[in-house]
Length: 406
Image (cartoon, rainbow, N blue to C red; front, side, top):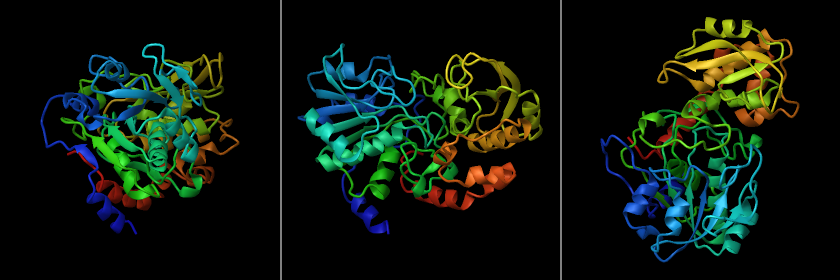
């Protein structure tokens, strides 16, 4: 079904710059390459940019400030995702419509907007080219990749051109892991059937979206990185880390997130309101038996420490809870999704108070009811993870057609 679509897309220009293999010590981001080329891709265009605090240069200057003062770019609007352009909103929030005090540019809110409504925002902003530059963290349920998808769809509906400036996948792009979304469970934490840890960059995802999922492809250019290799973790990139959202403070958070974010679908704290969100997990009544059960599994690349903490907000605010802290000692061997399943299986046995969120949010996060129902039925970690291997293998084959880096 997809062959004619792919052939059509392959015959059309989609990338502004396609790097040749390189062994440079540090990668150069899509924005760096766009600027080095004198913004020729944007010449004569009325440009709007979808970005947030992660859209920075190597010296930590925001790219909106850089482009605003450069006469070669006609930057006319900024579009903010979840958490906002300046990143002041917590999960599930945004900053609304305002004028940016630093540049005077109008800032429009894209959060939870899609289709014709979002197309109308682009039209009202008076842009003809929409640029996307946001640091992703590599997990299907991190909403920025679905902001990318929605903006691509809206740009197509509004007759706009779309440009993606690439940045590294901070947890590498070695492979895809975890269950694949079933379409009947599609929400803003998963619009389309990709793996829970997708192992792709935003430019690769943009091409996948354009080639497989959008009803009509958008005119797409991708400005790729040079010097990035799929096996490279973020701290080897030489690029500064800016928290992409308030509860993603470090690359270590991103490393565990595609597994431990599943605890948002439970009554166990995922560590929000602590200095180690998604690395600390716990609840009132949990004790050292949970850490002991996990360490007995000898999961590759990770150990678990019995931990106690008092979240300053979110679940168990101001109350001391018991649980575990995740310590990854071998990132190459660590599988965050399998580890997340092991955490769920063991806490359900170690703590009698365990419960799923009443709205079955876990199904939206994992992409189907399978994880919840199998764990409730007493399935082991291996049984749960084994259940998605066929669909994961199919996604890996599809993903391979859109990978752009060695």
